[in-house]
Image (cartoon, rainbow, N blue to C red; front, side, top):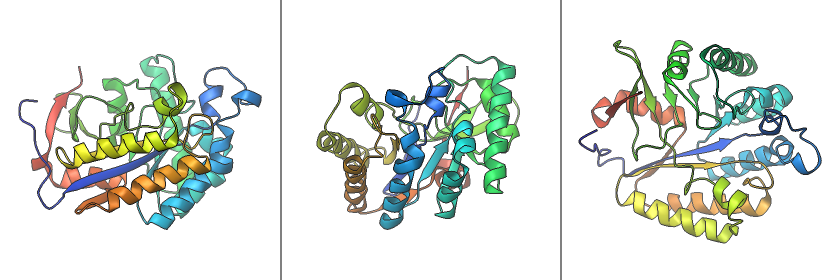
Length: 276
């Protein structure tokens, strides 16, 4: 990509919030019983998701919940509650796959999760985020065939773009790249044990720089206990961050699907990259 395309002046900064459900699927997919010290994922449906729904509703901002199919099977009422509150439900693998998948196994799992979520919600799923960063051109072909309009997995750019995975006219999908290092709660709470107040300071500094430059921000959190943002103090930090962004002129919050549709309707603001 040779020329960086900017968002239009009337869209001062686009913000998408993503909650990666990451319930017991995270442990089960690794062959670990989600019990005792490994029960963090069960906190998602019991406490973290309801707390996020309540807070996001109070703040009046859209959000996308990326849900593994296994977690949806275990907690269908929680997935329905997300949808009933007006938030988008998107796909996030089946067992939060952390292993390399062959094309046949990957296709089966992508379609399995899609069926689970569609049956629960009674409507199509529009987007996907890789549970462990793995994806191929086959991934994109399957998502496109299922009617998905966006992916939010790549880490290679600061702005949304068209991701081409074939030579055909329709072999493109909208990519909403996400920064899973400085704009994600996982590395701070899992590895560096950063206090919530310092996480907030980091996110604010990232937002300030983005607001002054590329003006597109994807913030990702997890509702788990342990290394997620589902606990009271950490949810409060997320709410404070939302308030901080809302205090800046021209900030607009979108669901991932909502912003993907905006991008598709405004293709002059998109660049294109090719899947190897």
